[in-house]
Length: 158
Image 1 (cartoon, rainbow, N blue to C red):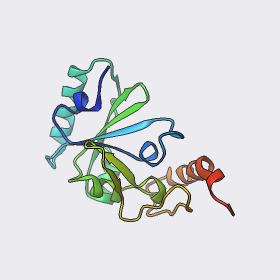
Image 2: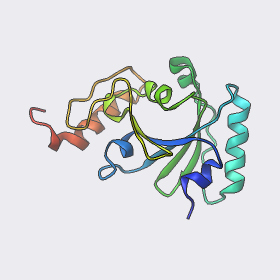
Image 3: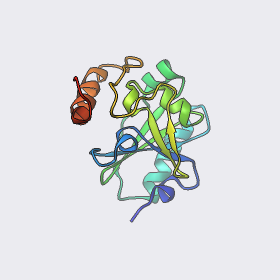
Image 4: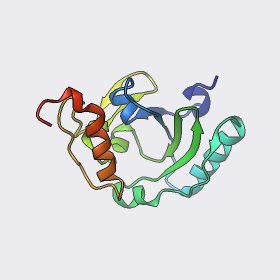
């Protein structure tokens, strides 16, 4: 079985988003692997290295996500999926910078590779109303509805 440490191969990583907020209700796990170089070439090279090292990953051949660069100052690149895990590379400097790029407060949290729970600067717990921090493209409204439906039973007055 592939662990996140094996997949990251010595790089820092975290699990961020819905699984970090509430693993019992999450449908998948977003594993973010940090790549320190600020150019696109290393992200592509690291993706290829991960594909070679872990052939069980279902590859995602999508290009670099340029919207992250424009809106947050960092790039991301989806490597693929392994079971319920989505493996994503980022050149964000650290977990807080990564979380600053998230669009909805409820999922602005992460579990570090050391097991530490990291709250984003505008994080709200799952029993509070979510806040749209920034519009992260056309999927923000859909994600907000999904988050509200997922945690609705915890909140009174929704």
